[in-house]
Length: 329
Ligand code: G3H
Ligand code: 13P
Ligand code: ZN
Image (tube, rainbow, N blue to C red; front, side):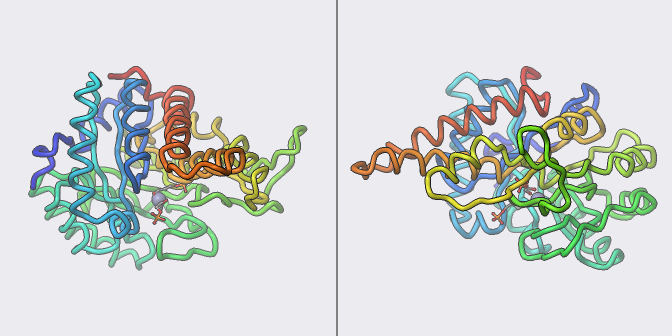
């Protein structure tokens, strides 16, 4: 199954336009129907291109055949609602050649091969092999150099190993990737920094250390005009963390990347910004609140509906106020 049969596009044109106009394409992860509906409606309503992301964990959770049909359904739903936005489907953190091949054969239009934890030459060899297969199918490929702090799927990094600008040109030449994920201080999940790494502002909110924009600038100088990807870019919005904690949750000292930092990154060569945890937090907050306030309800639509609605709103706000991708289509 080729991705065009599902109505999807690869990332090439999206990145070209984002680079030229100084914004970033949102890449939102999904695992179920409600998340997917919220992403499509949120991006459709805000006139933003979107990259739908599926991790290997999501693939196991939802089933690969189901996902293929969900992607087809998402594109059809977007058209039916009158949204004229490009939609790509990306494998997030692909960890083997075989997984990338399987996703490409089932209709993914972009794959990430994450060899960032491997020794440099092994990362190059694996990424190059994936690119050869992917490009034969018109599928675009994201590689990664540098390791994010925290948990990158099965890869546990104690602390981030920032991308070395001197390596990027060589990596691009040897692999032929279409975009490059870099490490400049972001990390996955809802606990991106320890409280002792942060300062506290007047409202008592933890403020993390700034991203390493100096490294980003050096990279941009080495590979001008090349699309850069930022993983681990949820802001861990206090609004939702607070609701979770108010209604029985235990997310103490959760901290993310401030929106101002992401806004700055989106105006640079960063063309794709990955957001998963913020969506998880919205859904959990709304469900916790609904359950606590409506203990007699047992119809899943009653609590999943408001969660889906709030997720859509959060996505629209991000597209408009953080990524700058709203209104481009
Ligand atoms: O970067 C990782 C994504 O947030 C996916 O997470 O492996 O739990 O689906 P997951
Ligand atoms: P967050 O955990 O910050 O949402 O990052 C998601 C991500 O990088 C997916 O690849
Ligand atoms: Zn990631």
